Length: 276
Image (cartoon, rainbow, N blue to C red; front, side, top):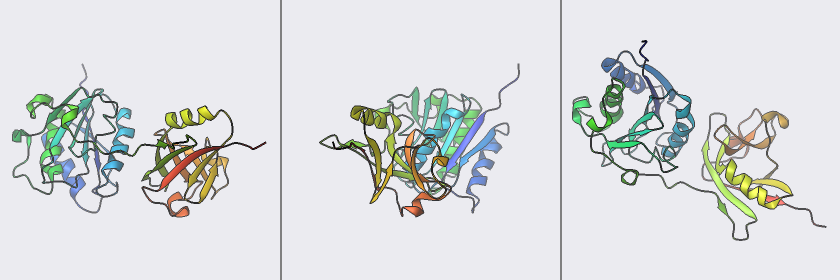
């Protein structure tokens, strides 16, 4: 029977200027040369845990079951935060315990969680500034060779690990306005909000009729488009992206520059009805 080659994915904020990504790959391959390494991204905004949480949630289900996902966005490296290993839906995640897995476990479910504390699986010595190399990468490599999670350290529950204080869309007191915010800006300059499609449809469905208007600062966009080419090149639009989150975009241009927008900027949805 043909043996499956283990898959390890890598998600970091290291960029590609330095040796950090290559070194992590070298550590993994030195322990298990039979793994298939896949780069999800190394160009995340530095120290942006929320962006990393969004990316890993949007990516992991598209990999084979039993894939191991290494996440190293770790502004607290060397401090008191733990490294954890979490199993969910047949996938394994090795990451700092800083909330980066908040969206993976947003439904309140995880199959198994443990602290990563067994130094038998670490490189020696352990640098206080590069746990990605000395702890997370070698642990992922040993997992790919079949070690069981309990061998890494003490068992944990979801209550034991850190979660991000996630911004959620809010309904105004008069229920006329759904208020969210920009939580990420992607490579194309699309403004990704925290308004998911289900929340949007519940809000707009209650209104039955009227024109949907998306507000960003002093700008207004009417309706939600199904594709970018529903507007002229250079014109703005609202659209649900591949993560099922409402995005504000500009056809073939950079919405962040167009609107001079930043993460945290308020976004609103309202239904305008005609007055008789």
